[in-house]
Length: 287
Image (cartoon, rainbow, N blue to C red; front, side, top):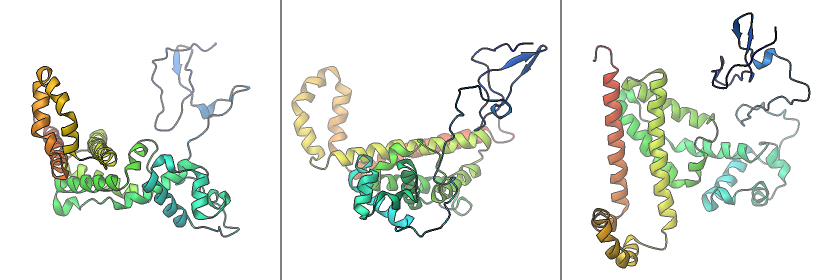
C-alpha cells in the first residue's frame, strides 16, 4: 500500500539531534514514522551535513609538530578581538599578526567559527560561581551573574556569540555546571531548571551587552555633554512626553557607573525574587 503524507504540523517522533525523515506514512491503518538512518537517500539528494565543533572534531594525528601552539593562536585571536571586535578578525589578519602562514592556524581549526569557539571558551574562564552549598543558591547566582557581566564588559565581542553555537568547551561547561547547581539547589529540575538558568543568562547578556555598547560609543562625550546638546529638544518634547523628560533630567543626567550598577543590581534582584517565588510554588506540599 502506498504511503500517505500527513500534515506539516505533525510532530516528529525523535528529537534532540536525531533528525526524522520529512514524511510520515500510513500502512495498514497504522502511522509509521521512519528515522532517516533507516531509509535510503533518494537518488540525486545529498546527505544532510552535520554541525561541527572544535570540541567534538577528532584531533589530528601528530605526524609533525605544528609551528604554533593552540594557546599562541588563541592569545593572538583575543588581542585582535579585544582591540577591534569581531569585524577585525580574519584568518589572514591573524596569520599576519602571528607572522605565520595560514597552514599553522588551520592545523588547529578548520574555519573562523572554530577559532571563535576557542576564544569564547578562553574568556569564559573568567566567570566564576560561588559554591551554593556554602553560600546559598541566591548568592551563587549573584556571583555568577556579576562575574559574567564583568567578563562581557572586558570582552564585548562575546555578546553576538552567545546562543550562536553550543558552548562545549571546558570553561563554559564548568561555568554552566555551576549555575545549574545553584538553580538546582533553589528547587528547580528538568525543564524548569533549563528555564531558570536561561532567564539568568538572558538577563545578564542583555544588560551587560547594552552597558558595554554604551561605554564603547560614549568615549568622547559625557552624560553632561548629551544633556546640554539635548536641552532645546527636551524643551519641545516636554509638552508631549512630560514623564520621560522629567525622568531624563532627574536620573539620566546623573548617569554614572554607580547608577548603571544600581540598575543591574535592581533587575537581578527582581529576577531572583521571581525565581524564588516560582520555586516555592513548585515545592512539594505548596498549593
